[in-house]
Length: 451
Image 1 (cartoon, rainbow, N blue to C red):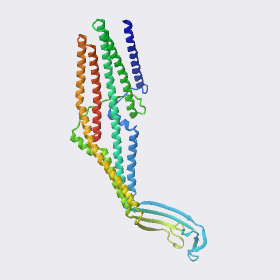
Image 2 (cartoon, rainbow, N blue to C red):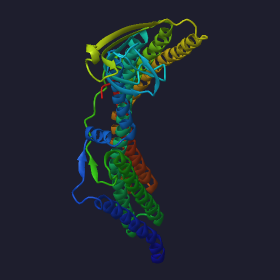
Image 3 (cartoon, rainbow, N blue to C red):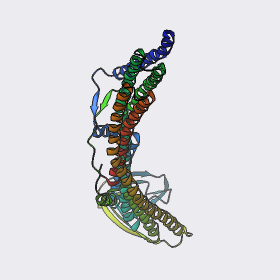
Image 4 (cartoon, rainbow, N blue to C red):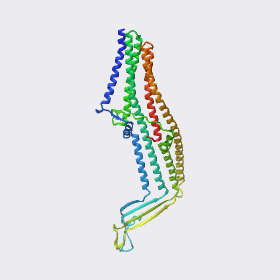
């Protein structure tokens, strides 16, 4: 009998040693990176830290800033441009003279396109183009900036959703370690009780074997819980710190009550970024159609030039000739025929506009469905939280009473093991239910712009 007991207890000892090794490695992992104690962070602090480290959010920020600059560039294109033009031209003479006589005459250039052998230009030039396309470009850039701003908000809310999910999963893993340790301690306590009853000849050896198997399973569950905690903290640490192995602890926030459905509907229609993005995209498509149709209309070009364009680099030339002066021009080019290219561009823009309208209606339908889905999920998970807590209390009392009955010889070891399993299952379900409610509430708050 003693050899049998030694054979049964040897695996238990080995398993406990492995559990201790895992716990020590986890503790060493938390302390090997930083000497100071772990930093306690809240959900809001985790979100703030993740904003500086998440590449997709950084790309969305960059796109939004670039779109705002594009809008500024488009507005600047409506204003006149000013250039200070300076040029010196030399053309080989052809041997003849222009001017008809020795006074005021000058050598004629070989290239008839040039005005003189030496020509100096120093002019201030103001150009302005007035047309529907330029005005439409400003509106389109503003709409594109609105699209980028909506995409930035979508990226921000996606980041909040990711951080919140990882935060509460890591927090649940912390709590589940407490559950696993309690269950392991309960298994050890019950194993001791069965051994004492066996020694007093009040229980069979089969009860001891059953409790030892239960204890081994609980030790394995504790090892899995420690591993899951380490993995969840690393997953969240990737978003929070340059070194994901940085030690930190999580501070749970208060449980926020579920808002009224009417408030949720109003906020979702007013603050939903997907809807704003779809509306802005449709506006961009409409402006693209207007810009394509603007090609049917003429553009008015205005030019004003002040300076010199003469054979001497001076305000006055020989014989009192005035070189300094100005010129102005207005150009109106009326499009007549381009082999239907403009018509085809208009058709392309209309096709894209129809697709954007379809995307908008799909976004509206999806928003309505998500409102119902997320609100129902949040309401159901909230209602179940109280039930899950009651289940834990009931299972705790059931285990206590079953152990008392077993001690009195009125219950079997299987009933106690079943009560232990029921309590552990209820505690884990409570932690999972808390995570479920927090995530459902977060999805609802993101949809309505509450966070």
